[in-house]
Image 1 (cartoon, one colour):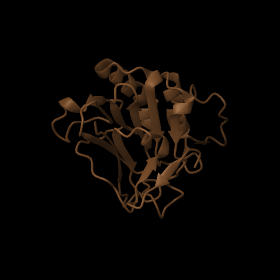
Image 2: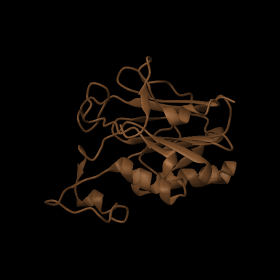
Image 3: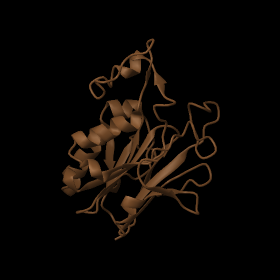
Image 4: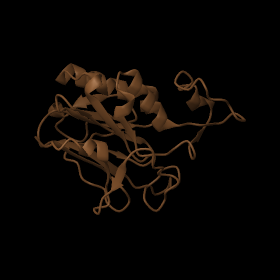
Length: 221
């Protein structure tokens, strides 16, 4: 792992750097323990972001939630896609993002930060972000129909026999930086859902019976 993520006795991963903010709680689920979230969305691999205050049921279609309400646990479900948990150290607004390749290509991370700025006066300079377990470049081979959406983000990529190994968490990290988040406030677990079959569900590895893991964040005060 590149940054400090810890597996708790409850089977949930947490980012040490987010743990510094005692006014919040968060976690990334595993096969052993997938936490519950009071509010999630019907995820559709989009760039749609909603304020939790206007979402009344789980049938709302979208892929990111933001809130500054105390005691509201928001979450996303993943099995290879990138879960990103965000907090604003100044306003105490928080966000949970589900970033598959389509959502990443549509810049859902940037849309989420824009929504936080619009609704809560968030400044990207005050943001901290944690990237949880997801499929990594080691296991994520894609063709030109996918990679064409990422050439601007990865000018250094070279094609190998018509295939690429797409680094989806790095794509989201770069978008966070482009949105104005400081590089030293973006933390990546480095955990691969496809490689680490004993710990995580993976849609690519188990397409016929994939489970889902919940990642959540909640403002406590």
